[in-house]
Image 1 (cartoon, rainbow, N blue to C red):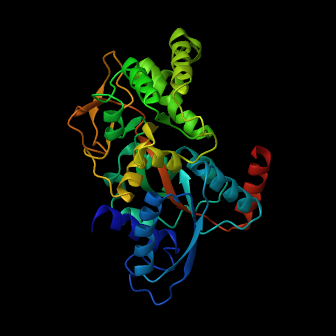
Image 2 (tube, rainbow, N blue to C red):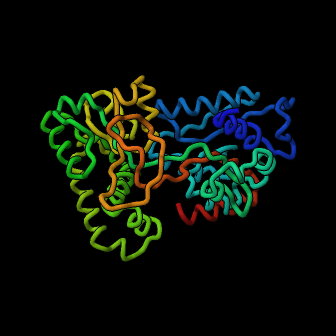
Image 3 (cartoon, one colour):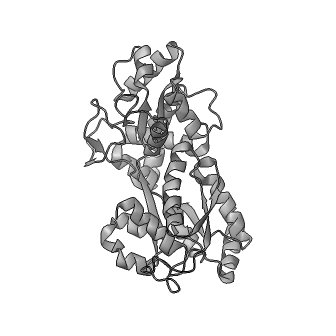
Length: 356
């Protein structure tokens, strides 16, 4: 069974039904039910991914009740989920970002039993990287199924637009990025497609910090929250560079969803976009060919020496290297099964009423 089918099967057989009532081996259980799934995969490419999971669930005899919530890179969906948790009416399954799983689990809303048998039979402890397994466990028990792991700092390029603007190659330094941006603007194109939403602003900010401060500096500032790194001269330089990067952003992008901005690059209205590797799904959905219709390069490799790792490229390009500085390649999204226990709802209500 391939990885996607295996994960989909985990969702359909474990996350939807209590293992104690329906063993994992009972693939042809007589009683099938419906499950409501709250998620934010609503763009064209994201929907294609959801459809794969939905098809597997329905193949196994369940009814998928779609609870898609568009907008905000998941922020809007989390608002809906919190509201329903407070009301004591959580969905059966929800998509939650990795860093938030521990907080959700601490409320008692995530089922700590339903994945035990399937995790054991599928040998998750040896199959998953420890960083991933630690993220999806709470107090030693699996509470979520990982469905994707993303690398964030990619620069997506329309080579035809570059050609029209007289740009010969993808930028590999900030100075080359600025030079490309100037040529794109002079040629009448949007230099950098960008939707002015908080999470998209954060994505660009993190990419700039990594490019200026390198891997070690990035970790010290944004992961370890070291005060010296956060207030030092390199962070000042990062913010100065960010301010300049912003001058190349789409002036009409404020509040725009990322996929709408990606479409501007795909359709030849813009030359570049800084976005995670999930952007490839939009190019694929548009029938574009990697290495021909689009390129992606790291934004951007720090000039200092940094640890490197071999990371699969989301698109092929003859102009890109095989080894990249390690960036924030972290678990991003998971499917979790929520619990409807009244005590859990009570704890969640008090927790979220104090934080919302």
